[in-house]
Amino acid sequence: MPRFAALSPACLALLALLAGSRPAAAALPPRPPTVLAAVPIGRMDLPWWRRRFAAKQAELRRGPVDLVFYGDSITQDWERTGPQPWADFRPIWQHYYGRRHAVNLGFIGDTTASLIWRIDHGEASGIAPKVAVVLIGANDMGRPHWSAAETTDGIETVVRLLRRHLPHTKILLLAVLPSVRAPWITRTTAAINRTLAATYGHGHVAGVTWLDLTGLFLRHGRVDPALFLDPRLTPPAPPLHPTAQTQARMAAAMEPVLARLLGDRPVH
Image (cartoon, rainbow, N blue to C red):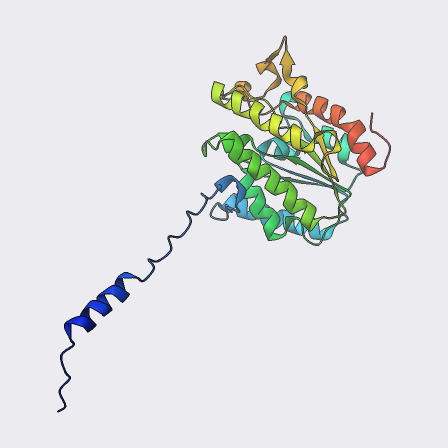
């Protein structure tokens, strides 16, 4: 078997020099943190949510669809029927939206992330509504405890997705409604709405109309708990969901803007 000659000290020194001159592996730049409020997070593990999603998909396919409401439980409440007057929403929905081929895509407990998932999975596909009303963000400040910046990012992602999937649909973006849950939530809600107003107010973004209904909830400069149904429940809960009468006031305040966007006559 042939034998290899030992390397000379000079060769060993040269090899060591060459090895030391190799550039170190370039450090990868740090990846930006994922904003959970702005990525799709489905809730298909919940049987009721899965059934509602399937039912709403079927409703969208039956058509026609001229008006769509995207949101959480505040939007889903439009489907409630008494027996208490403060929980009787459906007649108000019928009065304002019954003749307008409207679809209610509100889901209890949904965050911006869950709405993003729904949009990605068919709630803005195969339809061409004249107007989409968006009211989302209240639950981001609940159990997820997402910041104002994160929730704003989520809402802006919702708007971008709707503009991409529904290029001919006008968007009516509502401010996150006030509530009486915690001082941090009150401050965060105000911060979200300030940022959204600066972005979408005064027609800054084509196809998006910004509407802040916060003033409807104020009495002497403070949010009036009497305008919410939650304290009337058993057991009572912090004020978050408007009563039917309060949502009727919301619908009346929205009506001039909505009629203009739809191109029809206002409902009185």
